[in-house]
Image 1 (cartoon, rainbow, N blue to C red):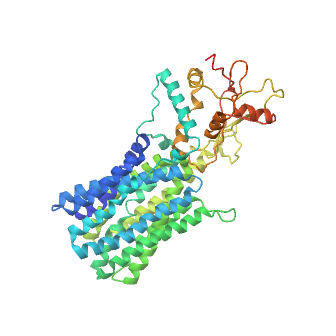
Image 2: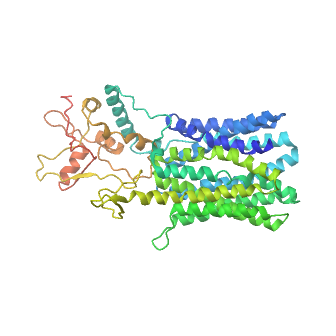
Image 3: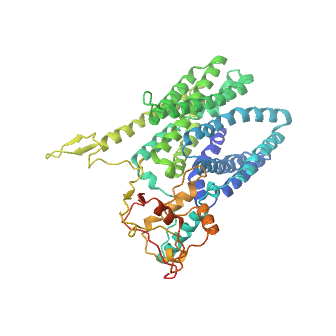
Length: 515
């Protein structure tokens, strides 16, 4: 019975500390966290090879390995978010399928390593393989380092910091940000995920033991390999359904998540009927792995769809954390029922939890429907309103549409035309600018990539600055240098100005001598 707690402990710890890992990466360094995580993971496997007592396994394998896996895995999620935005769904197929590939490959590697050279030396050989995560973590580089506007963005960030220092306001982000939990959709999703986790992963821990009990000890490795490959296949199949969403065939990600979870529960339910049948175990491994891999991918993409890229990392950390306690309790409960009543009776409990968690996702539809009900008559009766233009219609917690930008036509005369030019650092620091102008710079610096098209409205590119240095200095009576933005505006007087949403303020030329 004690061994039933050791198996899921490492997985539970890895999921439990996920919000802490993500918060640390956002405040400090993703690469440093990944390097430490790879080192902790390798040391945990090494300490496990020297363990001679059971409590030592709980410390090394259960706690240390879980913390190391969490740091390594969550850092990879954050790095992917920096480099891929428009094709995030495609890249996540490879990320999610990597878990299934690890089940298939590492099962074979660990089996043959321990069989050939023994328990201790075999785990030390596994340590050499795991230590690669330490060296791979050193290769992580922030995507902002490759951005052509990096110097301009850093300059504006410094000016924002100077403005904040004058007001003496500490606007640093909190270590734990619970703003995403204000959404009822996210809370319903967390509840559904936690309930399903009581039985969703139990076959991964018990399937090998059941196969050995039924006299299929020689086929255990093959069954685990099939399960891992089915996970990979499920990630690709459900990824194709998400990517190829057309007007003729469109399946919502919520229903993909719900369907995959429901079919995984059906597979777990029919596991109770397997009795020494090799073909039955192989079929179960393929069906269970297929829909479990599809569930992990569709769940991740559904969370990404609901909260978008800016809030995804924090929300995904809470989704993983919500599964920690259910896995730590659900696997031992299933094992206890199997031992007490029948060999596989505990899977009725697991399947019931999965079915219940799948049905809970219907609460999201009920919540959406309730948001469309308003009072439209004098009696105060609540009626259904499906009009998108209704002024009383509530907006979603995380809007998918960008904010409207104010477009101002330039004056007909070139004399009163607003100008955009180089402003000295001291001039910006002394200007009375609203705080919301520079609020989005933190997000820009974290997520920009060299592949994105950056529109230069408030900043000059590094290319323009270098070009100005090579051009002859054009000076007016006051010795002021004219910018390329001014020159381009003179050539195209019919252009439009695009301003940041907020008060209708115009940035004009600031004379360096007056500053």
